[in-house]
Amino acid sequence: MSTIKLQNISMLYLLWLIPVLIGVYIYGRQKRRKALEMFIDAGLIHRIHISVSASKRLVKSVVLIIALILIILSMTRPGWNLQPETMERRGRDVVFLLDVSKSMLAEDLVPNRLERAKLAILDCIERLEGDRIALVAFAGTAAVKCPLTLDYGFFRMMINQISTESISRGGTMIGDAIRKVTSDVFDDQIKEFKDIILITDGEDHDSFPVEAAKKAGEKGIRIIAIGLGDEGEGKRIPITNKNGQKIFLTYNGREVWSKLDADTLRKMVTATPGGKYLNVATGMIDLGNVYDNLIASAEKKKHESETITRYEEKFQIFLGVAFILLCIELLITERKREQKSHV
Image (cartoon, rainbow, N blue to C red; front, side):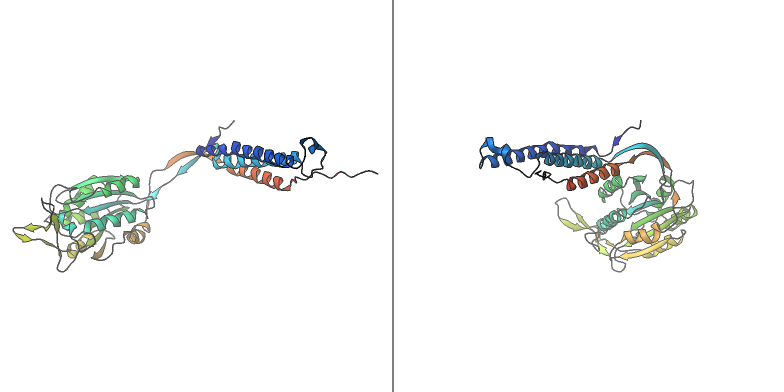
């Protein structure tokens, strides 16, 4: 005999409605009797012709309660007959490479470049369709904050924790960050289905990013670069001093102005197969559309298959019987069958 599995067993708490309904029925029956006794002596009730049949009313109530029980049982999603089912996942490996250097605090995007980038990444996660994702933060060095995973909840937790304090060493080493992704995140087994979404203002401190992009491209990795910031004059970098006051970052006594280096990013993406540069500058970042147009529509690899066993859900049987009982309850009349008088 197959084991019956209730896949939403918490619905059984609704069975507490049954004794409540039974109590309501008993209470109503007593109230009706007391109403009759107000007009007729208790001893004369059995002599009065009453057109309503108490037994039929009881049958209707029992049928209704049984139907309700069956409806509640169907809500528990009962099932039996275990069946094996093979689940196949298809998708790409996508690494979000996020610049967390001090220049990302510039406020030419509201509230600043870094926070806008984080919000854009979170919006993009809502569009994912089976892709494995990873998060690498970089400034003067790079660190893997989330390895390739299908656990989008864990990824969201890690992206929310990202700040300019996530990397202790200052500066911007885009080339080193790409080399970190190539060596520590991606594997070399398949030279396809790999994307780096680089989000940065493009400023680099002699880490040879174009050369690093070429090496990544040779391994089949595509770079999609998102350039943030004012490409013309640039913007000052706000920081907080020891007294909690807002000041601007200085170097050798002069204020630092950060601006987008789009030329470097363009050279990087052209060095990878199918690379794409998106010049957001100070506009809106819509990584959701980037994903739909460049990643979701691209060829995907088959991830590992997983065979699971599932119970065949049989809630339809319980609902069907309950429906039939409700129809029967509607057809049962409470009136007594009239007896013909014989002359």
